Length: 358
View 1 (cartoon, rainbow, N blue to C red):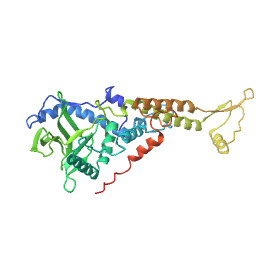
View 2: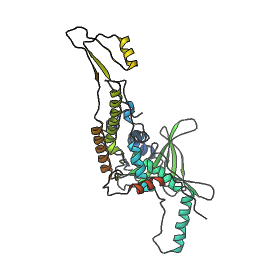
View 3: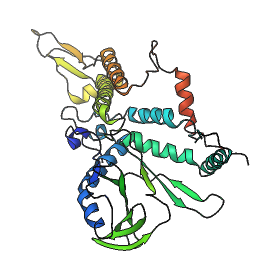
View 4: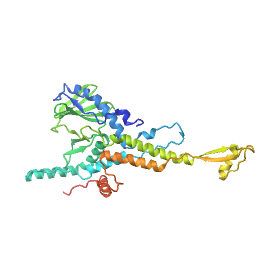
């Protein structure tokens, strides 16, 4: 439940924490300590990643706002620009299938590369790229993993959630030394599945089990950060997005408050029953409570300046787009892609890759 702002959680420290160790080689004897030393930062990252993913999906602080005045009129409008930002970034990066090419003039290598590309198409790699790209853009990092498969395709590609996956790096070399996934066993108990370059094992309650060689040849889980600091595409502008939600909600409040007006009676004799009858007939007949004071009835309204609100909201959104280097599709002078090009790329996200002809 995202009832707090992201700023309250990160305290100005944006991006995900990189998990480092001074250990160069992971062994059965040191893996518990290595993972244990990094687990605090892992859980910190997990909290922020969960927040950002829920925000991207529409669970935003405006849904939990409380009003003191006119609490009966409390609109909670989510104008989900976070979704728009992520979809644009993913479409821009993964809108077309990524394929490998050989830079060598060698027929044998070229045939091997072509065979790899065929495998990747059959393994639905583009679908996994898009899924990982959503995590990458929305939360700042993503992961891809491979596992062996039986059949014509020798491997499967998966995009595990960064909410239960991490990679630990050596501080000096910046090379990955172990990947960790937090999973549940058949009895619902949590354990950590770990992969080094050559071995895999389970960690549960500080005990190492099933330490054994694997056949992948390297760590089979790879991190794909959005940038070095693991900053997501929405977190630097999330304050602006919250402000847009607040502004749009207040605009709707203003409209409702204008409709639900107050009636002010001056020097009038009127009871509640008579007033209710007048409202039903859309007419008012009042008399002064004394001959020296003139009776008067006035409609009192509270109206928000809608034009000024729209200008302010547009300015906020323009600033967000400028920070993210995204062309404004509404601008007549945008030097970026045309609206047609942007829309075409977005459409590619929802087009399933076709199997390659044999």
